[in-house]
Image (tube, rainbow, N blue to C red; front, top):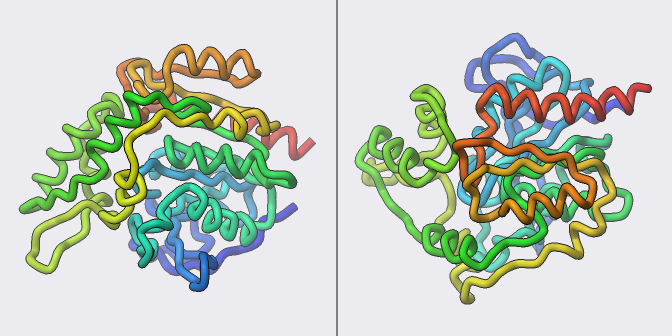
Length: 307
């Protein structure tokens, strides 16, 4: 089944829709209905429009451009869509901060999947993996293969306390260099990134404030639902139990969110597993070994669909 084209614009490099020869993605958006209002969710798109589709969804305070290295590597075989979840990157902010949560994100993402109109592979980091699990567990899901990057069915209390501690911060930086230093510090668990990779993250992680300073590229209100109640462990095992598609679970060796015991339990349940040494929560999936693991897992699904 051929995926439907999405509305898109020329990318920042001037590549026309369907042109995969340039170094950058095509940029577009999809409209979705949440409550009583339509909103826009932005995405970056790589690869040929008629190729099998992979959707890559980022973590809590990140955006879709985190996946540029992975998407570029996959684009020779796949059409890769990397959305900015509501309140992040180029996507609309939500007027009601209480709507910032997985249920709303799944609504937006389901509109994207409906616009695609074909089975997809899913790569989800942390929050993006929670959304992927929820969608993969649904009856009639279009998610055919699921990559869970440092997320599983059990989220320990200590990790949730750590997340609650930083997500409410709203720092402002004098310039992009200061922003990059901040990212290097708080996201050190991403792993052994080189200078170019940190610079790439910084380039897509800032928004300019009216006073000329630089803030992180998300709505600070995304923290409101998390801060509204005390931190608690989260049990997603009913959702996990409903997932029936092939799963690749990736863990940062030093992660506090997906523990070694949690990964072992996922393996017992039938997931393929991979551990990224030198990373915590969550591996950036920018290194060639991790990219190759993800590519081989997704390509196995593409071969099955073609046979």
